[in-house]
Image 1 (cartoon, one colour):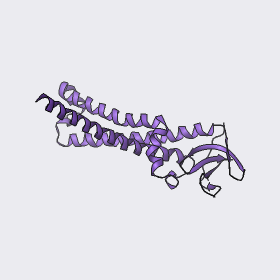
Image 2 (spheres, helix red, strand yellow):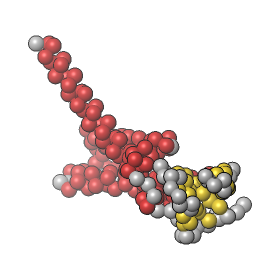
Image 3 (cartoon, helix red, strand yellow):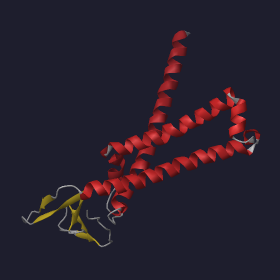
Image 4 (cartoon, one colour):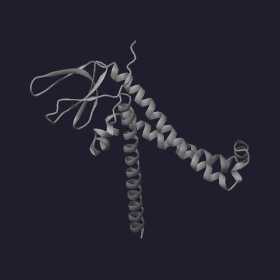
Length: 198
């Protein structure tokens, strides 16, 4: 009897863990896509034109900051939700004062859910924008690298980033996409951006 209950409990825990892990990974990939888009958009690059699915599946793990933001994006709203429930149950009078009595209205819970979702999305978007700006600043300060082609031609530039098939170089305030595996030597990104000189 006890073994059956233990086995059932174990199976439920494993299923729940798998579900939570899958949801976390999917959210992290989505957040990683947004963060990478903002990083490359700072240089006028639409990363979706150059990357494939595999690039985005591993994108969150290429920079620890993306994983940190993904964790915060899920933990902070959950903690706010728990605080809301705690105040509602244990400090009803204070809770009634801070929500001006709206907590007793039927529509209030739906408004709170919508507010949490909106805050999560807003937080992720603002974080991605800040990430893009900080990444651009850090990239521009890097030392140049050299890319040598099979015909011994060498290009020097600051590496913005890369996908499986393309390296993005900043050369003379212009962005070039250099294919890694084909006979095409370069693709110049014509969209402008500005580099602040100190």
